[in-house]
Length: 304
Image (cartoon, rainbow, N blue to C red; front, side, top):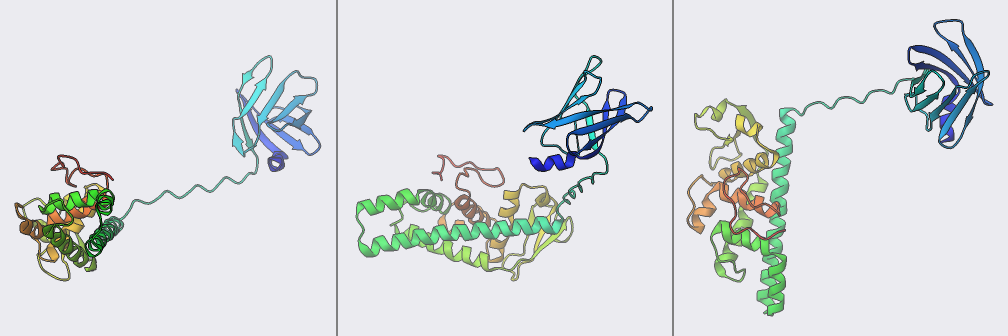
């Protein structure tokens, strides 16, 4: 802290109760004071310890201490006299005030859309990685006629992924079952198609396709490539995860999915929300609820 003693040398404005004084510190332990409201003044000495700068004045019992490390302006001080005992304010004269940090600007609509777009693409990449690893392990077990221990290890490592696929795509929760493996392969293909689509997101709010009287987070023309997604007012007030998943959902419309009731595996693959939630449940390893808050996983999915 020796450097803070360089700051000490020079003049300081000192405010104690209603008094304002100027202290002039010099190298070698000499200090003087004068009252800025009168002609009074005096001299004294200062000495520094590892934690304090202590002062005393000729002809006075007053004692003062400033805490180290020193700063240009603070009240880390102590005044001890017959007429006052307590903290007071000090300020180095001529010190350059620190430049205030710029106030972060609020994110623009373009920033908000870009963040959600990147989150959607990131969740798709993560989900694809999990699904491809699972597919590779299943193929390895089949090709090598793996034993029960290898199957058990697969189940432990991919238990959440297996449960998500089985629940959402309505297939047996058995990774060796043909229906499960077919659903896994088709999921990988559809996520790949979604991820390959270009960014085409329009902040429509209440205009464009959002003028439709039916409330929606967004609208996309099914099957149209490149996408023509209009983001509506509710999307902008949604939480970050829902913004992300709406974009994923809308891009499944672009590859031909609709919004339909799901009772079969075939219908699950034609439903944009099912596919978007498949991605969300694979990516968010503790998630137990759909992004829009509707629908809870019962019994709970394995975590992580």
